[in-house]
Length: 85
Image (tube, rainbow, N blue to C red):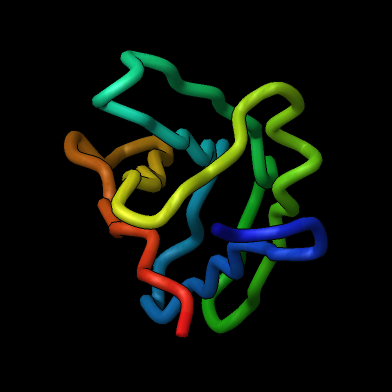
């Protein structure tokens, strides 16, 4: 289980500016989700962090999904929260 202090680090590895970056966490088993606007603008090569506390009531668990959306992209970047060692 992920604890307090864990963060999602978003890095723009493209040469494009990303606007209105939104992070969505989903638990498909409990049919729950939460979202937070990470930043209004993420320039090429820059990073932004989103902490678990910013999601308020949603607590991420291993196997759940994190989706990252931004303007001008039709599909999100999807990642699975890994198991802790």
